[in-house]
Amino acid sequence: MSLNPVRPWRSIERRKSRQIMVGNVPVGGDAPISVQTMTNTLTSDVKGTLDQVIRAAEVGADIVRVSAPDEDATRALKEICRESPVPIVADIHFHYKRAIEAAEAGAACLRINPGNIGDASRVREVIKAAKDHGCSIRIGVNAGSLEKHLLEKYGEPCPEAMVESGLDHIRILEDNDFHEYKISCKASDVFLAAAAYQALAEATDAPIHLGITEAGGMLTGTVKSAIGLGNLLWMGIGDTIRVSLSADPVEEVKVGYEILKSLGLRTRGVQIISCPSCARQGFNVIKTVEILEKRLEHIKTPMSLSIIGCVVNGPGEALMTDIGFTGGGNGAGMIYMAGKASHKMSNEQMIDEIVRLVEEKAEKLETEASEA
Image 1 (tube, rainbow, N blue to C red):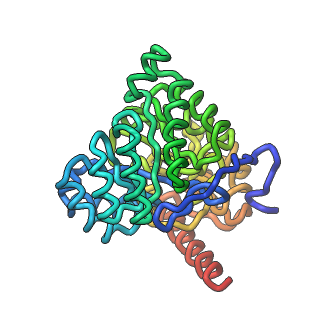
Image 2 (image 1 turned 60 degrees about the vertical axis):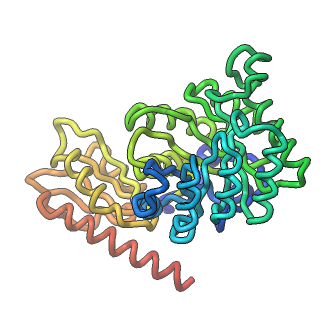
């Protein structure tokens, strides 16, 4: 029996979008949904920014965005882009010249905000720089910074205003024969963002960048992002995502992957299925999972691991995971491999044994993949 059978009731039909390239990362079409984050260092601090980019890449970031608010930042971008292990997106607001400088510095993509980048003539200059230097562009509509004429027309930020803003700027790009663009229409309100993205998905075939902007701290932002992004992804909308948290960018990447993994849209590393624990637990489930999450962070090979405190659901969950441990009695539990009971293991030795088994399986799978 396959541990991960394909069932029609758990499949997602993704919206058909055009594909563009952000550096060497394909976005849209049939490409995997990419995970992004953004640095929060001073961009002029090249070492600090690169350290953050590298840490984000190590946990799976496909693309990293870097703010370019001034000339010091765009000067620093040259080295950052050259040394980064992943494509760099330059985040531009207000000053269109910063976008031109960022393109010249080697940015893979320019994020411009229709609400503050300036008139069509300035956007045309940015387009020329993007063409000259092989950049893609993200049109980044934000409910908090819509154009004045749209706020006057609609009275407040609303889905219609956000979509109109995005389509107006798509028109400028296409009128200038530029098609390497993606688009986002973010809001901190989940309902507003979801409605805008649904309307946008019907109005264009451009790749869509998903995000709930200014979502909040680690807990609040994770919940809001999971609800907003999760529902849109479930509907098949979204080609690349960024979870916005008032937290370390590394945490944004981790949450992004967990959202995609929960929907079967992306797999990376060990997915731990664990119970909340209760009086029946044969070992300290919460502490065990906390330790295993840290000790298995280095595993990139997709794998499922069940950690269940007792035999009520443990054997059943183990049937559906690659490796499992179910608590028993007398200070020991059962290790399962590929859904079958393998051997007993004491609670004291269980963590080391699970880590060993996961590492062995990851190595075997990586070897098989390289030989295929």
